[in-house]
Length: 373
Image 1 (cartoon, one colour):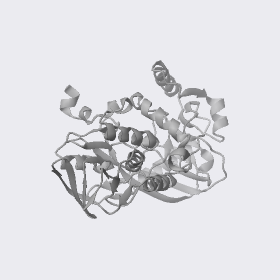
Image 2 (cartoon, rainbow, N blue to C red):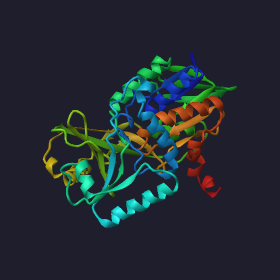
Image 3 (cartoon, rainbow, N blue to C red):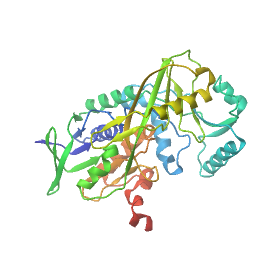
Image 4 (tube, rainbow, N blue to C red):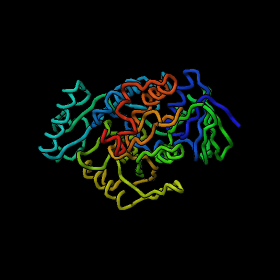
């Protein structure tokens, strides 16, 4: 039997970040991962580091996270492949561009100045070769993208360097309370701690249910595509208003295409399957955006399962049971929040106080009783 101050269930980036921040606060932390580190959402991420298009309720956390990304090497001793070449949401109609302008005006009224509207001339300079049918865009200049696998390696190394112990192939089979202590039986043995962090991603609601707490949660299996290498011409990350597409060019010259293109999944087995019709539609949208890339060969595809809430906002809050805390349900846009969400979780777990930036993410909002209240 292994004992810790905190057990973290789930070895994705949010579990790793939470564990890292907790360890640096002096806690003895064990991570229990059912498969292997970063198997699902974290490893299948487009790795967008964006404040662009965020729900205003996420903005305080996202802006804190963005400040951390711009000096991420101070946190994990690696730059995680982060490059701040900006992010764009391009529009092809005046109505779409006006909609973006109105959304940004509402953000500015709340005090957020991270986005602006740009016209076709500036758009063409930022994205040479873009289809001239796109007449402008919402633009966040400080945004960018990272390398998801390099980020996983960096956060894992930093966590282990801070003393975190990681068990892979350790699915949780049962959990009970013995006095003020959680006792978990897993595929890797029995573990005990007074505090428990549920960072189980798409399986977060199942872990909550093992403690008697019901949290509504569905899932999705976002797919990614990578092409052969091309000459480097595109720096920002580009998406299209109203389309499921995220388009970027890596430092190696490959095109990385994602942005919500959905595959199939099975929560019981943890397996995913490609939907090649959906992938073809995503590839066609990329060719529409950048006609010069039409016909570029796709070299590999993959997907991972992500938890999805009804309002597409995460669950980051104390659980109903004593010593239980939740962080899951990022609905496909949690990568950018990783450093700040882990920091906020560590503060909440160690002090018992809920940081202001995560107050909107209480699980009660997802239940009928919470909605009525």
